[in-house]
Image (cartoon, rainbow, N blue to C red; front, side, top):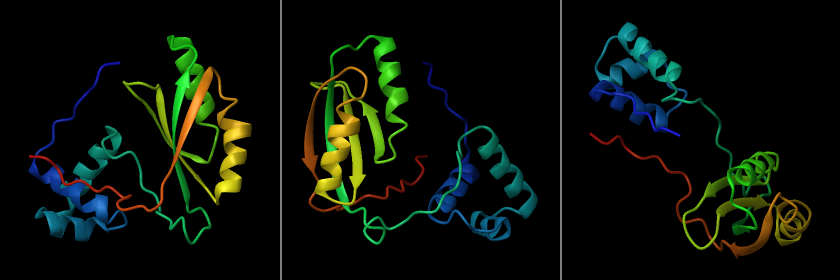
Length: 159
């Protein structure tokens, strides 16, 4: 896999900074904030979307108010790490809605998962019925989060 970068100037970075915090801002207001007129702002935003720099817009929900405040981080060690085994694991993991994040790790284990459930009982069921049955899982280790200190990451653009 080859990493591709996208050339951005100061206006593009300003657009990213603003919409990262205010995804529902109007193009007119965005144009005012970044110091361009509406048409070039709209064209830049469309280009950022078409090239995949901006991958989409979504609503953020409060998981506690939705009754999903139990967060567990799960280290997963696979029994097979050939590409076909990784592909099988990757495909299966995308089908489990309780898994919010899945990262392939360079280290003592193969994957790190962020799993969100209603509580320990529901987590135990997800672990037993879904995570443990994923392709090529040899073992897992669970770490339960006691408090989310920082969860929503909005990073400013780098120059």
